[in-house]
Image 1: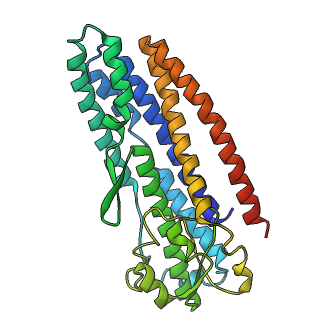
Image 2 (image 1 turned 135 degrees about the vertical axis):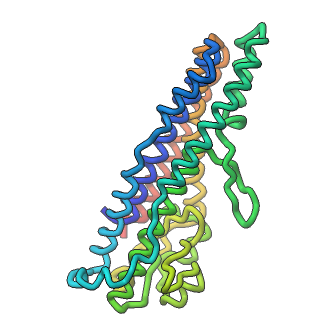
Image 3 (image 1 turned 180 degrees about the horizontal axis):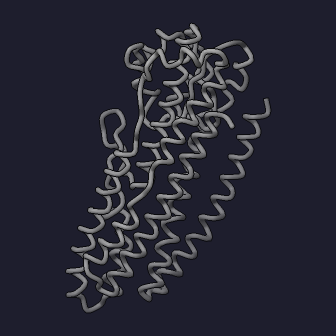
Length: 321
């Protein structure tokens, strides 16, 4: 498995895991409200649900290092590898735990407020219908994503932690390639191409850079390692450049391909949300809204199938050569 595919697989599994937790939390939130369960009962649920073992991340980081080692043809240099200290040791576990605690506290605070309000409502169904429709904005989307110094969007725990994980794995790959280039006395690198690359990365994909040129682009310093990748949540991987055989599949992806990929991801998130809301509306007895969500889901599934068909064509075109 390539380094890029390994990272993509890890990040996809992470976002899917968190999506399931967020959906389960939303349903538990409204079921508890309907039964007017205490904040302590909600806290007990959150404590159990968001006490997560993240040691798999360390294993994934080590596996990425090993994949880079094999890719960069290091066979006899293990004896001197440890002479050069690790340029950047990455441990995202504490960041993950902090974001989970922040989210659990936010859910608990909102639940406590809504619980106090629902006890004063005569029409609980209408009250809960409004809360379900605004839940995402009120509770989940609260983590700012900055772009060019401005808040570009608000993210939930699933997208934020998947970005965090992607950044750490990608930085690991860049750092290991950079470290091994010193051992191999080869200061040329290539930023590998991949389908659905973002507009920022397109200009760099498939290009060969010296160490100095990379320093100018991403701020790499010999004593500090790869401080940054091309941009936050970048999915490009870096390899030591050896020969022209690495120059295949260059520039076979476009900005339009990237936009299509982003549309598919957005649509999938909307589907996950509508599916959860449909169940929540059923739980509170609002069949009219549940039926509305069913119809929306039917349309969204059809649209997503069409987009995925286009994306498969793009993948085949990219890997054809």
